[in-house]
Length: 194
Image (cartoon, rainbow, N blue to C red):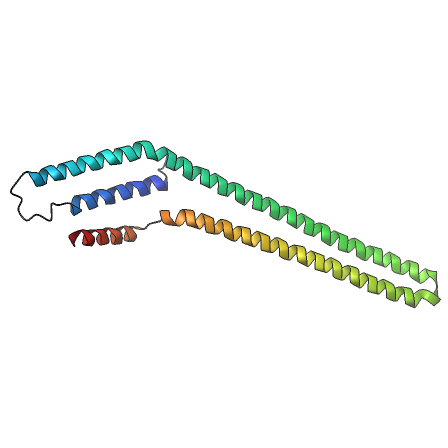
C-alpha cells in the first residue's frame, strides 16, 4: 500500500482546519436563541456551498497542482545534476593544470642539465635565467590555478546558493506546523468575534 504524499496529507489537514473554522465560526455562536428557521437554513446552505466548492477544487485542481510540483522537482534535480557535472569538469581542468605544472618542472630540470654541460663560463648566467624563468612559469601557473579555483568556487557557490534559495522559497510556504495552524485558526476566530 502506497503512503500518501506529504502534500496530500497537508491538504487533508488544511481541509479539516477549514471545516472546523466553518463549523465554529458561523452564525451559530452569534445567536443566543434563534426563533426562526432562517438561521438553520443559512447554516445548511453555507455547508452545501462549501462542500460544492471543496469538491470542485479537489476534482479539477489536484492533478495540475501535483503535476506542477513534480515538474519543479524535476527541474531542480536537473539543475543540481548540471552543477555537479560542471564541478567535475572544473576539477578535471584543475588536475590538468597541476599536471602541466609538474611537466614544466621536469622541463626545467632537463634545461638545467643541458646548461651545466654547455660550459662553466655561461653556467652561472644560464642557470640564473632558467631560475627566473621557472619562477615566472611557476608563479603564472600558480596564479592561473588559483584564479581558476577561485572562479570555479565562486561560480559554484553562487549557483548553489541561488538553487538553495529557490528551493527554500518553493518548499517553506508548504511547511506549516500544527502550532501555526492553531495560531491562524485562533486569529481567524478572534477576528470573526469582533
